[in-house]
Length: 267
Image (cartoon, rainbow, N blue to C red; front, side):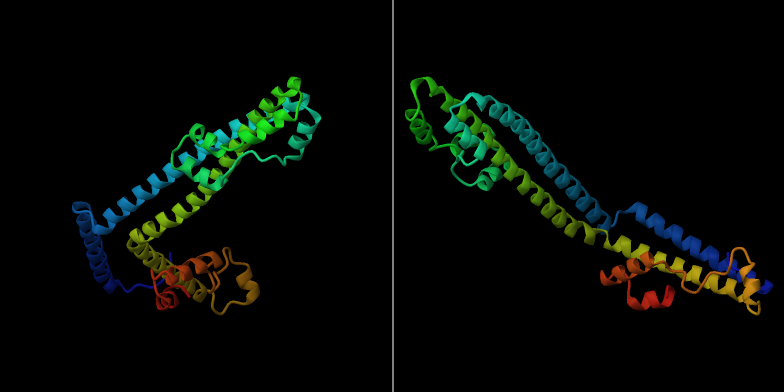
């Protein structure tokens, strides 16, 4: 609390002014409670839309990640089962050069995100691979032709993993984009409230600044060694933290307050 000399004759006026301010604030609060403002309705609408969008997008990502983990596990199991295959097939599998699907994994991934089932998409992605497996069977002895079915089952899982990985990456981008879009609607909805709060912060900083100035005046005439013995020592003129300065200048950049107001109240 700043120390200052107050004339006894000024007390009634100060009290009258304080009562007036309190009454004004109470009336303003009452008006807000009686009828929600357009900005409050806009805030509630934007807040609900943001929460709903985030929840939906995160649910889709969680579902895709769960499916991806399941198919990665199954792909590893299928790959271990290929250890008994023909040497030529094993080399193809270990090299990872066999083509397991036709088409664009990203396009299939977008369909997954849109709600299509993998069981419907996967056969379409694998369409046309029958010729490859048929030719592979013809190159093997009758005793080894079942190995091609094992390879086909592995490729099913490889294709599923590729599609799911693409879907997860796309959905992560969707979440980032959706977050930007929802915040583009949310930020204007709370702009009026933040503008009022920014001015309250400025007023508080102005009071702190004045109180610090009064505290420093009390020590005028003291030697530096004497000032050093005070606890606490007088606040310096630059009491505003760098974080608070950045906040104020960003708020000015967003037109919540003006540079002039910052200079007047805080700097």
